[in-house]
Image 1: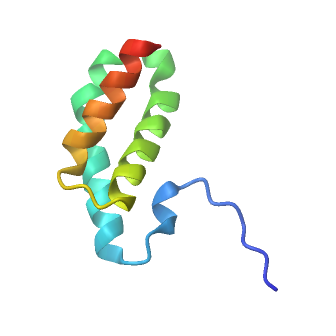
Image 2: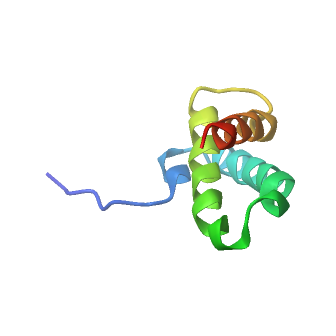
Length: 80
């Protein structure tokens, strides 16, 4: 049995390069939409959070990944 290494990149679970590209493009779009509203000292953490949100939307096959991710990110921000 081979042991898998932990990969902190949630997009690594996608096998199809087209899915990876779609998720990466959605992340760029979603992050550019919210980045300026995130305090600079929190950006690395919040961008990582956005990455996981985009990945979770992509896994369930939701259309318009960037828009869905933005909505989930902002909804969670209001409850913090």
